[in-house]
Each structure stands twice: as structure tokens, then as C-alpha cells.
Image 1 (cartoon, rainbow, N blue to C red):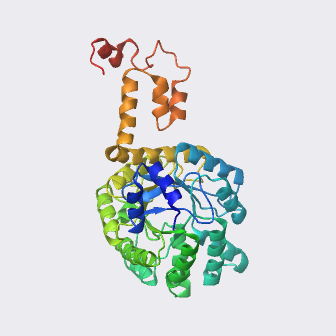
Image 2 (cartoon, one colour; image 1 turned 90 degrees about the horizontal axis):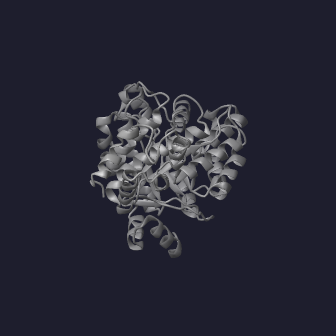
Length: 417
């Protein structure tokens, strides 16, 4: 699947032994999202035994089609420490936007192919309900050849799923865009999900290009009132089946998870997903433990993401302050990535010596007011420097305590290391 020299470089980056990396890949507990038709400067391992990874969603909207702005978001995400990006574009020339993002990205790029499929069919045939598997296949082959590293496929939403959703109505409905498209297609055509029905053929393509399949959670809860409901769990069981089908075909696979989840159910959701899906890498969209934090959902997601990562999640999807409100700006992206990195690091610091040392060292420098060293170790060096710049303070203190600086006083007493 991967050359030994490449695996050695990834193992070194992850600070693990090569045998451990190979073992986790072989049993499906970890993946490396990399299309075999290209090389990447910053490939990474996602899964059990590795540091928590972060993905950032970028991409155009129908009324926001600027390629330049999305490339600015790509750069902002990379600079803030995102491990992967996904191009979720649905506005403008999707193919040229995606090609440019893939060309400029130093980190793996994922897509949700149903977006391009639906956009193309709506333009050509007038309605998304007219999608055929030929339409799906054309887009999958095209994106694979362009170098997409991982596909989110909503293959777990079935005809039976719609019966469950109709019987047990939700407060938040179906909030997954890809899930809603397929739910509409299944409902109108009264046929089974074409991604599910043709899954083996799709796996053959994924195997050819070494594309990682990310099994999308079409029925993730969009409100905490729907947390861990029948529809969500029914789909999760289908995803567990699809994980095994991927593994039998030698295709890398990870599973996407909720969603809006009550705080007291986050750990339960992680355990359920890991058990049902054979400990496949788990990629969480939040989770968000409250619905009322409009404008601050990067904080909501960081709270949920930290609990999820501590409880078994491997991969956190960035949620920006603009979530549920508007198309995110470049600054929204940066703020979202930093929040997700804080969530991931708060778990990594408990598991990895180098992460613990980073906190230890920063704390030591802080006690002695060594600002330059603090900036270098901070997760958000840019903001730390900006807050400190041109402040009116005496000596090496801050503007909070003045002459009553606790650290200065305890230092004089000889209480500091």
C-alpha cells in the first residue's frame, strides 16, 4: 500500500516506531490519507495510538465563489495547524477550484463527491432526483484521478432509514447536506441508496488510487434533542457493516460521527462507534453539546471535541464561529482550527511525553516572564504576540497585576524552579 521509506517518514513524524505504525494500518485501527498518484509534504496517521488530528472544511458557496478566498482559507488552516482539509465547494467552477486546492495544499485533501454530483445533475437535468449511478461514477473517477485523498460517502442511509426518521420525527431533521440529498433521492425514486448498492465497485476504485473511504453520518443529530436516537444508531450499524467490507477489499476506512450530542452521551457515542465499527478511526463533527451558542460554536465544538477525543475519537472536524449562521471567513477558519487544536492537545498532553513537555516548558517560561519562549510554544503564536505588542507595562510583567505580580513576589521568596 505504501513504500517503506514513506512509512518510516510518517512514523518519525508521529514519534512512533515503524512496526507499531504498520501494525495499526494492517488491522484498520489507523489510516494514512494519501492518494497514490501524488506526494505530500505533510502526510499523517489518523487513529488509535496517534495524536489527535484536525480537519478543516473549506470551499465555495453559491453566493461566495471566490477561489482566492478559499486558497486564503487553505493557507490559514495550514498555518494554524490543521492536519487535513476538505473541499466542500458547491458554487462556481467546482473542478477548477478543487484542482487548485489540491495543487496548493501541503496536507491531504478530502471531498464529499455527492456535492459535485448533485450540482452537475441539477444543471444538466434540472433536478437532483435524476442522479444515476453513471453520474456518480463519472465524478468519483474524475476526483480520484485528480488526487483527492479521501472521500466522504454517505453510504449508510438506506430506504429503511427513512422509515425510521418518518416514524420517529426529529427536532433537527436531517442536517447532513449529503444525507439530505440522498434522502430526497431515495424518497422520490423509491430505490435503495446507489452508494450502498454499488459499494463494491466504488471500493475497487478506492483500492486503485489508495483513497481512504470516510463513511459519512448522513443521519447525525442536528439538535441535542435528537442525540443518540434510533435513526443515528441504525445508520451506525450499517456503517459497521461497511467498515468490514472496506477491510476485506483492502481499502482504508474511517467513520464519521455526530453531530449535536448531549454532554452526558458523548463518551457513550464514542464507545458505541468504536465497538460497532471495529475500532476504525473515528472522525467527529463537533460534537456540539448545546444548540444555543450561535456565533461561538467553535467553543462548543472544542468542549465536545475534548470529551470525544478523551473517549476514543481520533479526528476532530473544525467548527467555526460562523457555524449555522453564514459562510465562514478566513479569520473564522483560523479561530476554528485553533479551538480544535486546543481540544486535541488537551487530550494529547495526557498521552504523549513531548506534548506534556511543551506545557511544562511554557509554564516554566511563564513563571519567569520569558515572553519570547512563551510565544514560540503557544498554540496561537500570532494572537499571543498581538496581545503583548505595545502594551503599557513596566518591565517584564503584564498590565493585569502591576506591582502586585504574584510570580514576581514568589520569585523573590525563592519558591520558583
